Length: 253
Image (cartoon, rainbow, N blue to C red; front, side, top):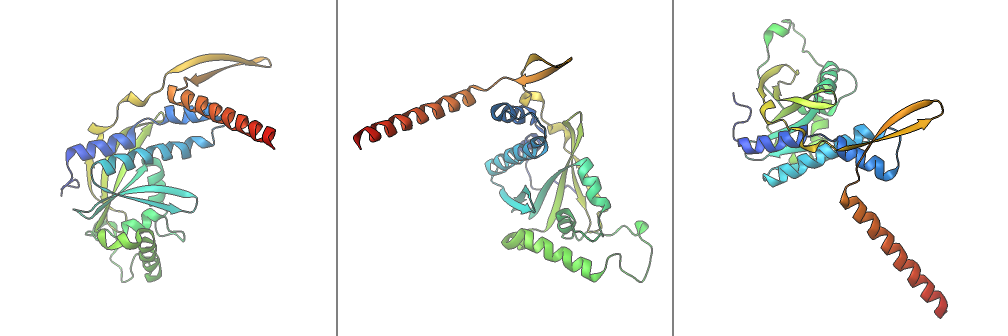
């Protein structure tokens, strides 16, 4: 079974490049502009950048983009209306943790999505028992959760494919599209690594040595893009105009 049936190679390439492209340059620019020295923003900012690229690529290829929120986490899903296939994106390390927690009290949205995949069950992985693997209550909660997440788009989704990126040294080096059944047993997989982005997003660094106390710490500071400089200059001009206008109004009072 071809997972990408109905999807053009150019579309797959566009989505994979958007997903796998480096985000370090963008997050470094934001940190530099805001004067941040801690790395709390790194993970969230990386995913915001990644999801933004996926959204743009999907819309360009006439796919439907679903933006959803789970707690404080917002994410992007891509829906191919023609094949009724929903694509969800994750890194391999995080995805493996989610799979291990299937059947637990807390239901991750991936647990909910995979309940839509009514694929054949591998009997070798199951004991032939008279009892179901999950309780009716758990299955009902999964269905309720996926209905709530997809809302009016629920009837338009027939299956969910997970696009999983393997990361090494903070770079996605391998991407696979995976189809699982409702028990998270792998049914089919396609290697999309040939479309992984090169380093065109990598940033240019300017080294700047700084000394703190007796310890010398070499910081890597990215160059500021011209667009950021222009925006800063524009903001300064607006402030000067406002201040001048206030001075004129004050003199006329």
